[in-house]
Amino acid sequence: MTVRHLAADATAEEVASALDADGVVVVDELAPHSVMDAIATELAPWVEATPTGTDEFSGRNTRRTGALVARSPSARQLVMAPLVLEAVGRVLEHAKNYQLHLTQLISIGTGEPAQLLHRDQWAFDFFPFPTGYEVQCNTIWAMTDFTEASGATRVIPGSHRFEDKLRLPVSDSEPAEMAKGSVLFYTGSLYHGAGANRSDAVRVGVNITYSLAWLRQEENQYLSVPLDIARTLPVELLRLMGYARGAYALGYVDDLRDPIAVVRPDLDQVGLAGS
Image 1: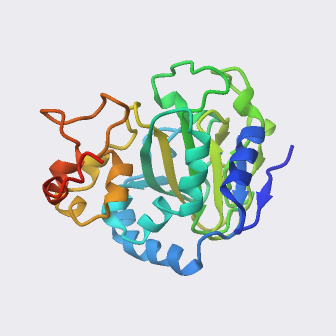
Image 2 (image 1 turned 180 degrees about the vertical axis):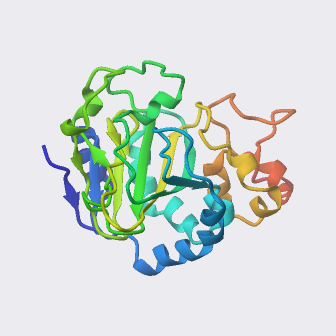
Image 3 (image 1 turned 90 degrees about the horizontal axis):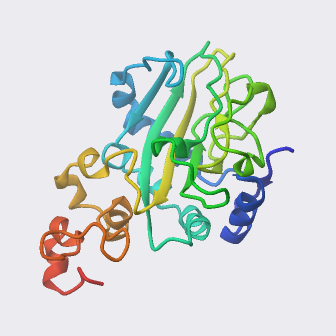
């Protein structure tokens, strides 16, 4: 089974339908090159300061730079992309709310071998979620062209229905090749992994993932984004970051206050915090 591609004018329903069927889909050239270039420029000093991984899974020649909401104003456009949010909402509609789970620029250097095929939802202490019950919906945006030679993310379409905790060979997967500005959608249950970079250039992708709001975030957004920056952000982004209740009684502050009232007291004053 090959990776399905949709045009940039695809609907959220089409994306969600493909994810239900295959667990993975690419939307071609959804973001302008200018946005991807702006993110690269804004994050350049942070990438330079990011150490490479310390084991084979994280990649000994791979840099994983986080805190994108704080460090890259342009990256916020990807986090809040309308097609992404609507598609994620459809995939995770069985829950009361969903949240931003992780933001990361992944720079895979030349000579990096292929990553172990895995499920991102294993981050939840390898809890065996029921097959078909999705807890994550993820994206990887291509900042550079993703080719098989450069280490395009390798996926096994349909593996979101496989048994859990399998150890599958890379040869069972195929590269999700895509052009710069394209975005790869995949569920947290899909078996996938970074490909081997056999090219002479760094393969760069922006990994932005979303999860059910009653699960702990992989990247702690409250600490990754300093409060002085958080106070300047749109309310919709703040709520996505976790300044909202995860369900009826999850995430309130002190005397049952909405958490948005802590970062934006002005909203509380005009009666919007409980909305």
